[in-house]
Length: 137
Image (tube, rainbow, N blue to C red; front, side, top):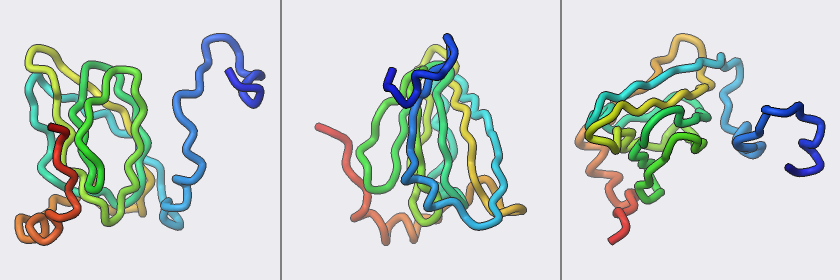
């Protein structure tokens, strides 16, 4: 525990601090807390983007997570995640487990009335394929 968090009571733990991430919160945004539950082997939503940044925490299982410009990675229960939203494509948010449910809880900051996600079409995916990082060999 760092000195700046020494005042926290027992049982309270800072998972992640991302002060620089607040720059992407749209003016007038509302906070939405969303729970994503994925059945065993569920591939999750197709490639999409979110209207604003989100901060999340894997509460159960393992999530195969991939954002544009980043290599795919596995997030396990207890791992925190940040996604900038806006123009960045969220390629994967799949259950990495074939025999158990996985779950992620996120808080998203978005302008009121905007959709939680917008699916990206095949043409745009093809145009932006150079921004996708291939998985490690």
